[in-house]
Length: 232
Image (cartoon, rainbow, N blue to C red):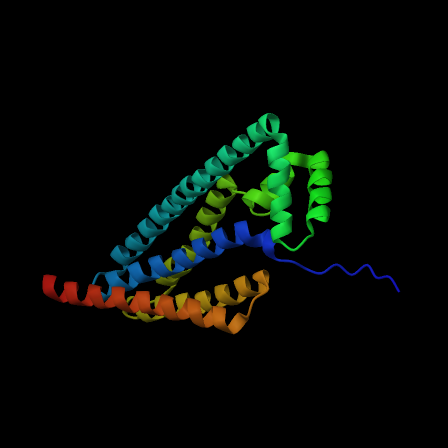
């Protein structure tokens, strides 16, 4: 009996999911830690809010620029490798065919079948076959700098907005506790959502992200308390 069942895969989400999770996590942790540190140093609510907003803007721009530059470097490397393969296919087509066949032999095909597969794939799309099977480049994981940069900046802003808003809505004496609690809850939710989107276990993701977030906030709050006491 034939079925139309299509098995779900999550690898096509790797590019944007990585950038979005990294951006949101960094936005929550860095901004909440900054707020906790400044609040623990004894600053008033306006100064705490200013620090949070400054951290949000600076962090979003930094994430966008950093992600764009790093992914652009990856894209440049991919383009260089593809150009080199394209030249090889023009100048040494037989060598490239044998090279592709050896890859398939290494994956378990017989030499005869590997040769047939290499010939047919190169007749269909020679550069695509070499990009995928020799270089490991495909449309799923290819570098997309603009997408990565925008996703990181947007995710950072969304994450950082949570502790900033909590400062606005909380009495000054409870800012540290409320901002930290809201941020930890947001981190737990982020871990659960990212795990669900990526098809992985929810509990390990939640524990991982909340543990490191709490550690960062505690360390920054401790520094703020020590330096604030020293300055005062």
